[in-house]
Length: 336
Image 1: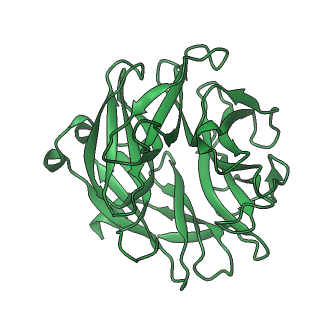
Image 2: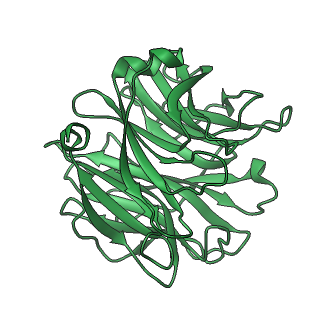
Image 3: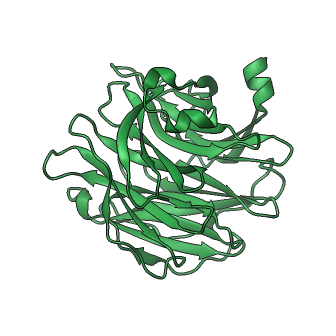
């Protein structure tokens, strides 16, 4: 497994990355700069580009102006659209005591360098996800607390006309036992979608999922996934048809987040609703050696020749968090 520095600036905290690849192989990594994990003063969305498979990266490109402590863009996702454009979605926090009403925005770019002005989306919550299905439906999700239970709940909207109009906001997944958040939507068969989610009680509980059999119009579940301690899953389909999920591992207890894992699952496990029937092969990707570790929030792509490139943020040998790239092939990782 090869390691690369995507971005390291020891004067500022860099975290929460995501990654997209264009049709020409260009990699676009988006992340946030800020003062610290718990202090988002000076936060701004930042982009670096690689045209050599993540071996070197461009200077920083800024998608937003610097924010203030209680007014800033928070956690972005980036995607490659079927029409060749890139899309970024991100939440904007104006008052941290009122997460339920956080606004979300979307930007577009043809090249990853020049971006449109942001357009507001009709969904409230934080840490949004964006997904485009094979028939062109766009799905955006975000989470906030359900008033009746106080538990974190995943909400969604969808568009069938490339973002010109949107459905009303509705619940994607809710359970009075769990705090469900940080969704990653994935199409596993025509009209069949699975949303993988973090459980945010800090107890090391499983990843959870909801399933849709009507292209994301309605959802059922939630169901356990045999990935304990799974934070901010990033799911996708590999070249061979299997599912890869990358995520931060939090085992619960007093331990900090210090491991970043990947899990390979066969496609048929996605719609299985019994935990014991699902298969997952988990492997390590990154480890934070710092005495005050902080890492995770991954994005990944796979090249035509099979190489996988993952980005995450990590402290490790830096005074503040940095963005790191990991390049590997699954036959090397899983077979030794």
